Image 1 (tube, chains in turn blue, red):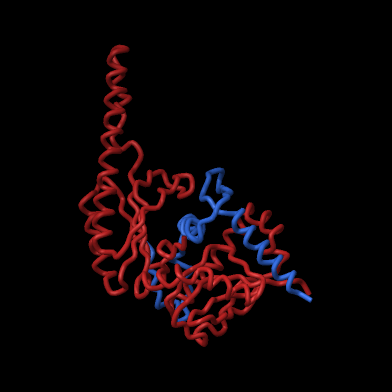
Image 2: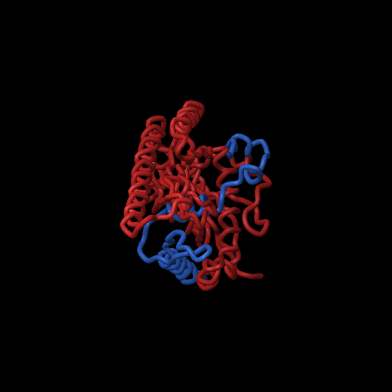
Length: 74
Length: 251
């Protein structure tokens, strides 16, 4: 069972280690949340559809951002 | 020199930047903050050869890459959450430059303020309920069926037992969830994880996330452990505290 204390990280202890969050738990949270937009791709782990990520939206926003940036460059 | 962009990990309130000194993001890049109207976006430089649009299409298919990015992202969010109130951003939020980072903060601002208000002084806990497969039992193979009808009857009974077990497990999951929710300020039921992903034979019937006041953690943990002891037919697991990922959803 995990016994990580958030305060431990402030004093230099790494959050990874004995109580490391499993990758599945992490991706549940890191990909399952966030700004919801259209378009999706499945990342699969061991052939199992893991979580939907909004890759198209992600790419669209990166693309728009870069285009604007390049347009502004001298 | 290759082109770089800014990777955003989180947006924080009341962040003392000095407390991040020495912290690193990807490829050893220093963590920096982009201040904007009272909020601080925590960022680091990333190489566009890795985080640009085309490479991302490839890299997001590569689970080792995704794991590395997820763990680095998580390590930074932990570090920031330890010293501030912070809303983690979704994995791979990449902006061209600091001006874009500020634009992003602006575009998220109304949601961000609500998220930060909601999670301040609180932490996320995970509660899972798992049930062993087929613990309702098949007919003993030591006593062979005496007829086709007997065989079918036994099969139907075994199926009924499994269904009862599953109904029971669902009911227990609901009870544990309600109890955990009663000790939390908010909760979410995430999709149960597939046994092939957890690597465990048990079926997950509850994958709950709970937002708990930092000073209520002992009561929360005690209540969930007590629920586990009341229901020996299932395994109840509590993990945390984690940064409030599941409650920082911006829509």
